[in-house]
Image (cartoon, rainbow, N blue to C red):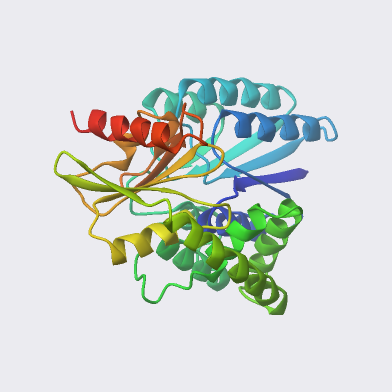
Length: 316
């Protein structure tokens, strides 16, 4: 039986949940995607094409959440198509979903969903498929620390940064595949990864300095909010943590060249999820969310205005 693993491309939880799935299905093909309607279209187009090559098959989707009606409708239609071709789907995720999306997808496939904010996708994958496996257990512990930014002083950020580097490389798919395959074999760091990491640092340090030149802090009601335009090799979560460590701000909103916004909070009085709801295809967690802007990313002033409005609306 043909097996395809599709997971989130942007962080450790996406890569390592795919690695744990690969331990369960070692002959599976790997494929990585980001959230959003266009990315889900690419994912299901790929799966549909692959389904034509095999009479039966299994798709394992991990760390990818449904955050709007259009994405939900696409997923329902695509899964129904696959089921007619005798393919089955396992979906593992920890992001908040709309109730109707949960109900619709649960009827069509095996859905393992936990949005309590206490478990990441790798932990759910571990519990459902590789429980008591020592290598898988190590991966789920690392993924939890990374996804929830816990035990940050002991957290090794190199893999997160390397994932970010690979995503912006010409051969990104191959690099991410290798990373997941190595982790599934218990290899968390090696000389090839170290060599790539040194290359990344040279570029990232320069781009981080350039990003900081755009730092703008505004008072929104009783909250101090930092807005920054980030360059491709600046990793959003780690950069946000640096800003919180060095600035007295309650919220960080980062925008990239494509108009994607990353939202991180430093105050429980703010909800990143509620803020993201006022952006295009917005979604995520209370402590970390994202979305897209309608404004032109080249017009930073317009982008800041749109982000400000999202914050204000979330507090009404």
